[in-house]
Image 1 (cartoon, rainbow, N blue to C red):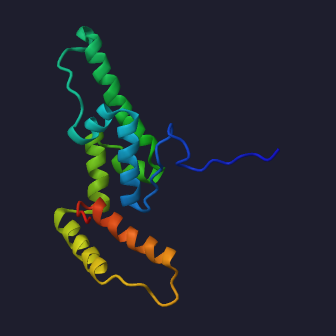
Image 2 (spheres, one colour; image 1 turned 45 degrees about the vertical axis):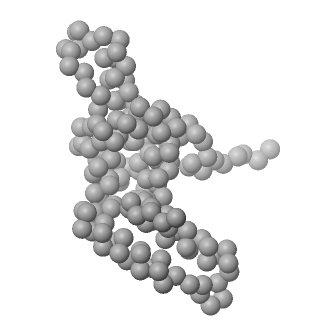
Image 3 (tube, rainbow, N blue to C red; image 1 turned 135 degrees about the vertical axis):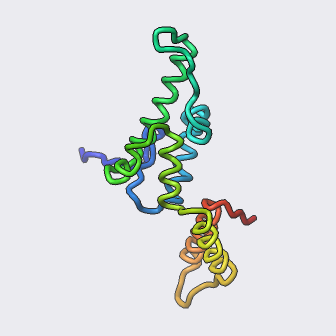
Length: 157
């Protein structure tokens, strides 16, 4: 019996791996993964850690649950990164800081983001089928432009 090989992304129990390539694709998949795993964990990524004001000796069950969710959010994000990418965020204290660091690294500042959007909008507006290109390949190329724009916050319907 031949051994089965499962590549990254073939399980709802394993976050999508980011190795520095195609950030927009990974970011969207990671958002879906975190939201599907536990929407409260996605909220921690977006808004920051759940706050616990009590000293450790006085933690309530609710405090322990908050700490646990904060830790789960952090470990899920860390497990989704290659060693090279993990090294970029390892000094961050919160999951939100980790997410924002990756976002800034791969999307750039607002000015860089706007420039990338402008370039993609131009590609979108001038898009046409290339000589000898299949309809399937043309559609794939077009959807890549749309998805990159969506990942940068520019929506087309």
